[in-house]
Every structure is written in structure tokens, then in C-alpha cells.
Length: 130
Image (cartoon, rainbow, N blue to C red; front, side):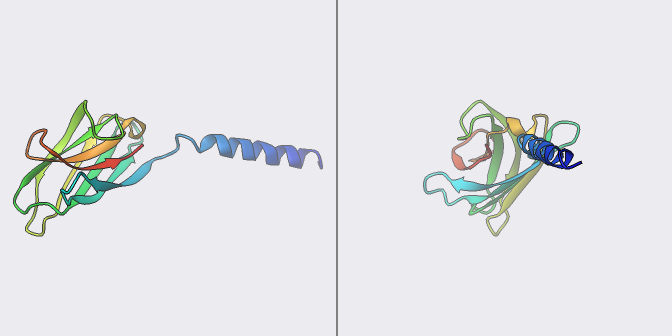
């Protein structure tokens, strides 16, 4: 019995350590302004149990009434290739948000952007995910 307890303890430590990598199911990352855009905010990503990821972007410091778009990337610095998440219009307080479900898993998303316009316009802010 005395020999069994240390071995069981060691086994639990090994199993616990091996379960940590890749176990990330939720990430919250800050949107960092690009240059002097003044756009900030955050992005929340949640891994879905059967594949795909829910992505929610909340951006501040936007021009009221202006249309923006959000994209996600494999790269960690919001560089192409990009996949569209959605478009949104800033409210009178300069805040905008977009939410969507993407087919990619959380560990495949490197960054998420906010760009000016309904298309792939100028980069306003980027959130590094991985």
C-alpha cells in the first residue's frame, strides 16, 4: 500500500500536466490600435464542443455611423490570407460589435481585426490570439 500511493500521485501529476496543453476553450484578447486609429476593445473566442468557434468582437473609439468589418487570420498579426467575420456600424458612442460562428477551431485562429469599410479596408486594430 505504501508503494502504491507515490505511484498513483506521480501518475496523477503526469496525467494532469499532459491534459493542460490544447485544453483552451475560451480566449479573451485585447484589440490593439493600429497606428493612431484610436480603435481598441476586445475579442472573445469560444471553442464549440463539436467544432468551430464563436467569435465576438467589441470595438471602441470608432467614428459614429461608420461601417467597419472584422476578419480572422491564421497569422498572429492580422496579415492575409483573411476570412470575413462580419460587418457592423458604430453606434453614436463610437462602439460597434459583431458576433459570428466560424468553421475553424480556436487553435487555428491567430488574430482578429477591425478594418474600415464593408470590405478589406485599412486596418484599425488587431487582436493577437495565439
